Image 1 (tube, rainbow, N blue to C red):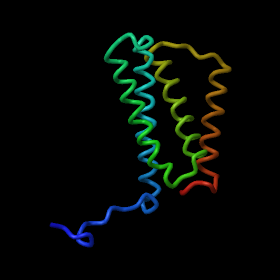
Image 2: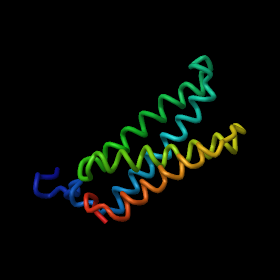
Image 3: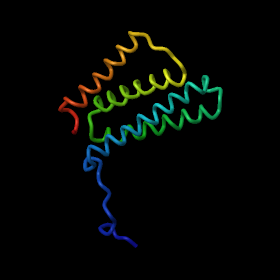
Image 4: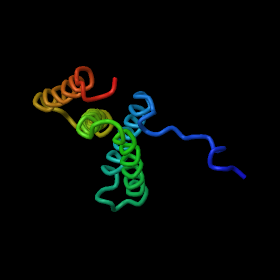
Length: 128
C-alpha cells in the first residue's frame, strides 16, 4: 500500500506548460464547434442523436475550457475560444450547410480574427 509520500506527484495546473493549456483550449474549441454543428442538426432538440451529441459536446467543451482558466486570464481565454469558435462554425456553415456570407459578414469575421491575433501575439496578459 502506498504511503502519502510514495505516491507520484501530479503536476499542478500552474506547472503545466503554456502549450498544454493551449491544447486544452483547442480541444474545447473543437468540442464547441462539434456541439454547435450538432445543435443545427437537432432541429430544436427534436432529433435524438444530434441532441445527445450537442449536450455531450458542450459538456466536454466547458470541461476543457475550465482547465486553462486555472492559470490564464478569463478574458483572454474566452476571446480565443469564442473567436476561433465563430471562425470555425462560420466555415462549417459555409461549406457544409451552404450558408452564404455577404461582404459585411466577411469583414466582421476578419475583424474577429484580427482581434484574436492581436490578443494572442501582442498581449502581455497571457503566457507565451
